[in-house]
Length: 366
Image (cartoon, rainbow, N blue to C red):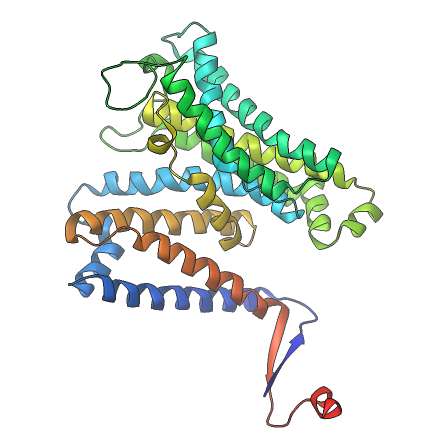
């Protein structure tokens, strides 16, 4: 028999132990899955762990990992603002799409300039449109008490359809292209590559600076304290003098702006043009939800989780090309990690007590 005894305080070592257990579970199941899926399981495991040193130049492989890490980390941190306050924005994928649309619209409105002076305005336009799209479920939540989880999710698909419509309609580019897309942006209005031949560009610096600023706000300001209060109970938030409605507005504004900024960076650094949704959106918004919880809604944890998931995703793509292993293994590992980390959070809150005798409650019931 065992019972769960609530902990009076949660120490750093208690949290570290639960994280170590979750990692062990994730690694064990991942190895088992690779063992089943591959004809050469040992090679698959080894190549997935060491892929940056295999085949292509190491800076190319690390660039791919850092690229995904930056997008995922900044979107996940924005989402964590709401999650801390029990505001469930799961529509970051749609806000990412509207951020890209807003950035391209700003570029067109400025006369399609071929100059770097337009870049700050283009990025701000992306963040602004991501914020506007996020405000729709915020209005519905505050004014009509509509479930923001459902409305933000539905807006993802509407945003994707808007993106595709613009590519096949008003902003249609080269008709000879193999997919619906806009005309490309001028090179001068795009973010530059830091290291030639790699995926590392100045957008990574912009995203990491945005991440650092938001992390500092959450950790060291009154807003961060306010969200920590709201995380425990809305009643405590009211006693502390904070308005729950204002918390909803702030949560959606911040998370939408971060997703929109990521979309603008993706447009100006990666593609240089809008493409129909199924070929443009990379599911960064949905993956960021997983990463926010893997990182325990803490900036440092989110950054580490984003790097881990990015490493697994790029590694899975590598072993698919080299060994023919289906890269869907990355999604399976991602889901396994989520369930492992969420289940072990119980160890932070409760202490497991084993005993040979049934508990007093059970004896009374008998």
